Amino acid sequence: MEVRRRSIAAAKPVHSKTIEEEETHAQLPLPLYIINALFFTLFFTVVYYLLSRWREKIRNSTPLHVVTLSEMVAIVAFVASCIYLLGFFGIDFVQSILRPSADVWASEDLEEEDSHVIIKDDSRNLPCGQALDCSHVMTLPQPQPQPQPLPSLIIDHDPNTLTFTTEEDEEMIKSVVDGTTPSYSLESKLGDCRRAAAIRREALQRSTGKSLHGLPLEGFDYGSILGQCCEMPVGYVQIPVGIAGPLLLDGREYSVPMATTEGCLVASANRGCKAIHLSGGATSVLLKDGMTRAPVVRFGSAKRAAELKLFLENPVNFDPLSMVFNKSSRFARLQAIKCAIAGKNLYLRFTCSTGDAMGMNMVSKGVQNVLDFLQAEFPDMDVIGISGNFCSDKKPAAVNWIEGRGKSVVCEAIIKGDVVRKVLKTNVDALVELNMLKNLTGSAMAGALGGFNAHASNIVTAVYIATGQDPAQNVESSHCITMMEAINDGKDLHVSVTMPSIEVGTVGGGTQLASQSACLNLLGVKGANKESPGANSRLLATIVAGSVLAGELSLMSALAAGQLVKSHMKYNRSSKDVTKASS
Ligand code: ADP
Image (tube, rainbow, N blue to C red; front, side):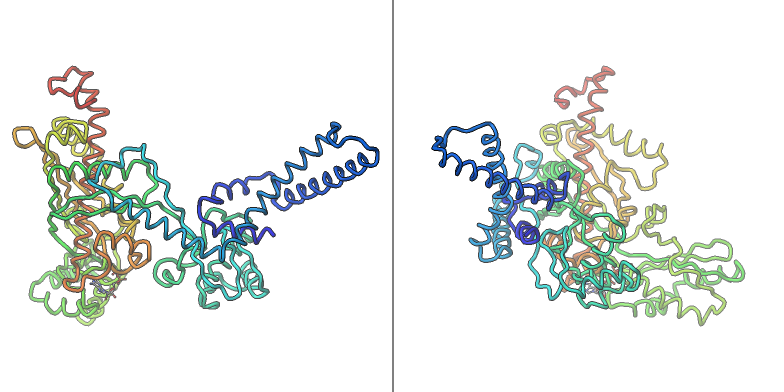
């Protein structure tokens, strides 16, 4: 009974049984089946008692409405147990009769709610800043499990509870628990990624004695991550995606998806978008586009290492080397080799364009080709590692800040004075002063490396997660210097972000997964650009920079209005009419 009830409950639309209700069950002091047994016992006991009392009254000709205290208690117990049992079993029973299939119901309902949301989206007038009005709380549809046929394993539609019905599944779980079957081999052994994930998950729960309640299993295509995105899956983490925008950038509007659990972040970026939009939009320039990989090689002497450096940096050798390198992919085009020497060790930083891919795999393959080729000229070269950290991937490094990695973008906007006052609730002078003291001087005092900004990494990471980028690359992708200057006789604000190492792609990695690909689609940069390979990833990089510009404007304004303006007043420097701004 419990299994039946749970499977229907999980397939139901959100407004019947909710996750909260499931959580409440999880928090009961006693297991569910014991509570059910107690209520059943109570129900039958009081029914028996009341019927026998009724029979006795008829025999003795006692009026039925005359009730004793014990009969009153029995009636209350009867009503309570009825309410519990009807609530627990009755609603599902009625719904199971009325609905042809719980799954069909759920998916129809979802479609309805989805289209509702789309209509709401499309009916926006102008646009930005409205998310700041927190009084409009929208109820969004909860993710629903996708119905998928399972041959032998019956997975409850409650994403946290599995029921294994076949001997085969049970045997497999036991063999994973006792170590006979390696957990990593489940996909290849079973040939069914979802079933493999379900068995691994159950085995994990049994062997650790810890519940994975709350980590959903259902509603994810495990086949899509096999061999490229994640090994040994047991579920997936849900991260909400908010929309900031429209961001008016280079004459086009973009609704920017941001996956985050940080409250106010999307609203803040949205406010920045509004300020940019009302001021005529932002402009971006892509300065460089090249992914890097730097192997480390060792020689018997520093002299030999220097010889290779001179060989690689000699322009005469560039063409033959690039021919070897470019064989790695039709999209890989070697741009430069920059070498750094440390004693007998040489670091070779290869830079190449990679089309619409972020490019790490592509550039690594090209580097391997060149190393194999060089081995003939330099047989004493010892390749220590294909990555020698002079690349430099996922670590703060001056080389990326100075030389760039991935896409180097500068993005600017002129924000009108009245927009600064009305939308950003501050004034130009306060912003310029805060930028100088915080983003420039403060970061210099902190010895920052590429961190001359207020919160570029907030925006970068949220957009990266939503669009399937490698979130670990937020380290160097968030390198950013934010500049602010009063222009037009101090009336307006010129703001810019310069970001030398935005590492993004629209093919490969996590970009092909359903959710991430939907977000790329929203931005109009999904997949490979057929006419001009690389155009999609370059556009995405400019959108990232534009979104950072919006985020910088908004947070800096909040700080200026909240703290700096107050301190202006405190120190009696209110000649700039900061009182208005602080309001
Ligand atoms: P990364 O190098 O970012 O890790 P992958 O190597 O995983 O990316 O993915 C790039 C793959 O996509 C390559 O096999 C490449 O041939 C293919 N591809 C198809 N179209 C494009 C394109 N427009 N730009 C770059 N790669 C493309």
